[in-house]
Length: 471
Image (cartoon, rainbow, N blue to C red; front, side):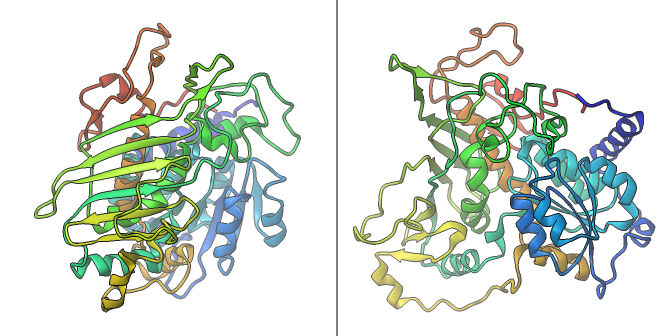
């Protein structure tokens, strides 16, 4: 493990304290070296320069990329080649220490478990922030980012669920607001994810740490463990310590459309059933380190004014909802590849792809009679560039943290129900591995305002951010 300097520890403590207090950044700070006039190019840094980060950087390549950060030099190679003048770091804290005055905004594309710690540090320094979905790893972290954004309205924020800036969600909203669905009471959201190994538990043993990779920095606040190539660069999504499973990966993309259009807000309860990996003796094997290979989750939302209660039914791992009545056998359910939404109302049913794209009514012959006017403004650039334009012109884009926060909290609430489904749930305190037993498919009652499970208090252990170490 690498030795940490007192300077780095002091910086992390200072940044975390400021972010936790949701400090209002003075206008003279934003008006200094980091201030961006509407006509200027934005000075952007990237934390996470490979994988998804590479695509995000490419989307805003017209801006001034002043610094790149990645714990994996090999993953970052393409971005470094594309932006040779940008300073390069493995440790984001060193980057912020050295270039704080040079940076206006930061785009963050790291594994889920380091979204909040990097995002809050940047916001505490007065930087505009773009964070890939899901917004954070725990509900507590999401709430902290949302509150920090609320306390600092001059900071322009965006979560990387690209469909929020797309045509699909807007056209679907226009269909809904035209009254063609009536009162929507049931929503099905589904995905073919995971497309990575999931459900088999943590890998055993260890593998050598490559020279181009800093394992300690990649772990971040997660508990120490031996390096294993099974985690990085992709399959970390299937392990609770780092990722949020199929729901965390795709929920912010797929659920966004009905969540926003129906103004769902905080759910009141969630319950789940999960697919299990079977051992050689054909007995179900529960692996608390790993997300399940498939799940079905029921999330309940209360009435909102004149809008009725809504049941959201999420399925992943290739589990599909029943085809709506009147839908032909050769018509695609969602995108035809196992991803999409169904919105069932008192007057009609709508089927759409990921991002709410290609919305159509069932039976599809009803589409012949639709002439819904275009009433909503469109985003005419990419999702990431809309964030940049928001910085230049002082407006919040399509998935700012005030909107993305409640959506992500709902996604993570579904994961609480997934984690609560087990006949052998480990005692979170570690005192007795068999002491805490929850029967399968327990309904978790949720108080969104207080951010707590009210009927199974042990589950609140997972609501909070479990920081296991200082790195």
